[in-house]
Image (cartoon, rainbow, N blue to C red; front, side, top):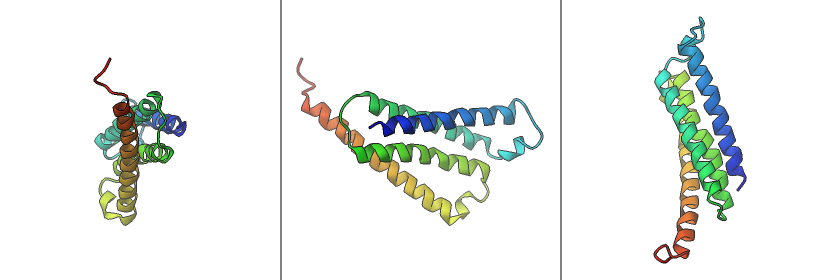
Amino acid sequence: MEILLIGAIACISALILSAWAMTFAKWFPIKGIDEMIPDYKTLIRAHVDYALMALFGLGFYGIGIDLNVFGCWCLAIGGFSNPTVFVIAAFDPDNFWKKPIVKIYTAISFVITTIGFTLLTYNTLTYALSHNPFTI
């Protein structure tokens, strides 16, 4: 389950790096830097997605129940690779969906993330239901 913490730390690191990249691109214009990020709005999407994925990883870890290890790995990997799709799109908005490798990467990332969320949500639900929530 500790892989969830490592995944969350990776997402938080990417979150901070993207914040600095956006700050330098917009607030401290340096010739050449602003042009490196042609789709600023999509980089913001990546920034928000990294934050959400970090929170999901920390949240699942923090509930303190035994979770499916494969699901933890899927959430950690998919939680980082999913927002990275937005990063790739931000730096190449015109050709992003024209590249087969990007389509494959995106599909694999979504599948891995979905598997992770499904397994961990199932674990959490079965735990909650095994402890009757309707009694005191």
